[in-house]
Image: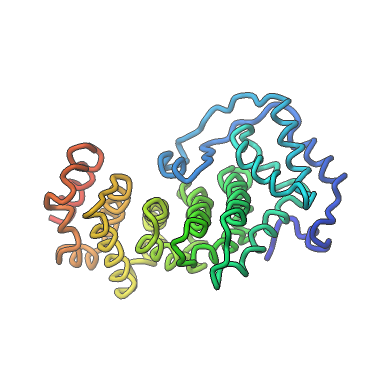
Length: 332
């Protein structure tokens, strides 16, 4: 892979130059924190913030003491004995400095450590042998990757280094155990942070690297929160003209997508989710721009959206009512 810090790979793991790291970190945390547009720190924040292009937040000046703690925690990543605790603390404190993602990306050896933490658990995925503590440790590394994916200065560099593909093995797992679901959810959070900014190059990357089958599978069989995030990502992909063409240009692929969206709707009959219903409806509205998709929807895919199945959600959520009305008008 064409990682930004290729020189790191010439050194054995755990033997990075701590003195060089210390110098770099001092530079990264010098002075007041800069403003970071749309920095989200969790999967829920990614969805709620919507389109990142207009969600600029004014960062408060980070205190020197907070910066010093973050600086020390990043140095402790180089100690095998302290790394697990340092990952957990950095993940917990990730809101303290809006430029932490930039510091992680540019600090000597830190990204290599995060990659190593992720790759180390591949052997535990199949056959399933993952424990909750090991899953939590990997999720803390993924949460730090999400900071890099969110920051405008490092987002595209992370993508060009093909780092998101390191997460695909987690997305392909099928175990419903919580430790695997947490891995899938946190991995989706990293990808959601990348796609929410409506960048054509980002969407092309995920189309070209066969991410969509993984996304659709999670939409179909994942936990509720994983479905919500995966459907949000799929929605962002098809809003892009390239992603929309990829999905709708092949009849079998389009049919598969519509079947899965219908499955998601049917699965919510017993336990409706307002957030998921809105995401699915937005996907259907976009797909209705294609004549073949519109024709297939007329054959019953939107039945539960038209009848009284989700009447409680309709009554409570004005935004959802508007989306259903928009879909019905588009299909009329």
